[in-house]
Image (cartoon, rainbow, N blue to C red; front, side, top):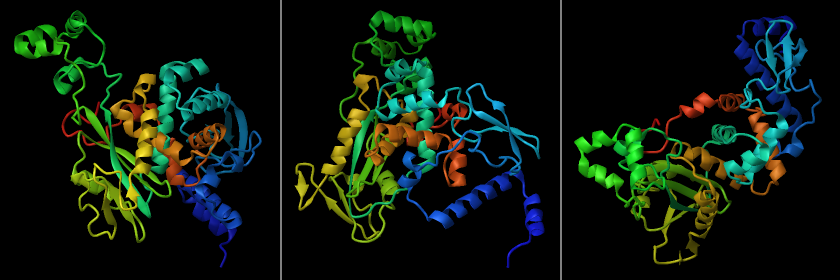
Length: 409
C-alpha cells in the first residue's frame, strides 16, 4: 500500500538535515538502479559515462534540509556556483562535501595537476608545468591518494593463482625538521651530503653539540664520521611492502612493517584474501609464509629461491609488479616518498595499475570526478569528502614500526 503525501511529509519533517541528505542520496541511487541496472565500477567512473550537466544543474536539493527550493547565489572566488536555500536560508557551494571543497584551484588547473600525477611526474615538474608551489602540488597529490584509499581500501578478494612476495624500500623522513628525532630516535644524522664541519654546524645550530660532547662523546664521534651509508641487507632502515597479485591482475600491496616480514603479519594480511575454491598461493621459501593458509583450503606452492619455477608455478607476475614499483618510486628522479605517507603513495600506484588501460585524459577526469564527490555510495562519499589538510598532516603511520620510531610524526 502506497503512503499518502501527508504521511511522507510527516516522516520527512521528523528527520534531521543529515538524515534527509542521506535519504535523498539513497533514493537517487535506488532510482538509478531501477532504471538502468547496476553498472560496474569502471563504467560508473568512466568520464565517457558521466552525464553532461549545464551550469546550475549539478545541485538539485539543499544539502542541509533536502528542499528543492534553491536559487543561484553568486559564485565563489574560484568560480564555483553558490546556492541559497529558500526554506532553511543556508548557503552552500556546488562542491559542498567534496575533497576539493576548500581548494582555490579551478577545474582546468586541477586536471593539469592530475595529468602530471597519473603520468608519475615529480613534484618539481608538475609545479613548473602548472606554475604552482611544490607544497601546493604535494598537498593536491596527497589528497588524491587519501581519497583513493578512503574509497577503495584493501578490500579486493583473489582467486585462482596468486603470487606473493615482499618489496623493500628505505625508510624516509623527508620534511622532518626535528634534529632530536634523527639523533636520538633514529640514531643517525639526516641523510644530507654534509662534511664533518657541516655536521658540527648542524648539531650546534640545534643545540646538540655541547650536549653530546658531555653525555656521549663516542656517539658524537660516530655521528661525525663519514660512515653514514645505508646498512646492507634487510634492516630496520627499510620498510617491507607486502604484495599479492593473481592471474586476473587483482593487486594488493601495503607497507606492513619495518625490517623483515614476520609470520604473524603475513598471516593477518593474507589469510583472508582468497575467495572460492581451487586457489593456489605461490611464494618463495620465506618462513613467514609457511602454513599461513592452514584451514582455508588454499594450496600453498613454494618456489625455492634458487629456482625460477616449481612445476608450472613461478613468481613472474609479482616480480613484474615490483619492477614497475621500482620505476614508480625512483628516488633518483626526485621521487622520495616519506614513510608517513607511503601507504597513500602505494594506493595511487594500485589505482594506476587497476586502470592502466585508461588514457591519461580518462584517468585525470576519473580522479577529478572522485575528488568532486561524484560517488554513488553515501558512506564512501562522506569519507572521501573528509580529506582535509589537517587530517592528512596529523595522520599516524599505519605500518608496524617495531618500536624503531613513533607512529605519530
